[in-house]
Amino acid sequence: MSEQFILFCGRSIKPWIYTEEPVNKLEAIQLVVTGECYPVKTIAFDVKAGTCRDVSREIAVEAMNLWAYSGEPLTYAQREFIEQSISIQAANSFAQAAE
Image: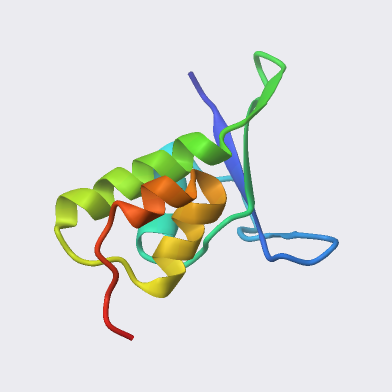
């Protein structure tokens, strides 16, 4: 499948697109895991197939799993992202880093 991903960031009335060009799934996850972008919405599309879908939760779960495997406490921004994208229960399951 040749899906491409667009990450919408920001919490304003008009969220902005984070990357100038669509990225692949691995790049989208990497942008979140490294803290470069915490998207409010992630869209996957395949022009050839004519499909488009919301993958916000899917990307958030992938990032959360990578953070879980790292064994490090979540930063405030990571915890906030999990809470907003998945659930407060998922965010509370992690230890939080001392601020």
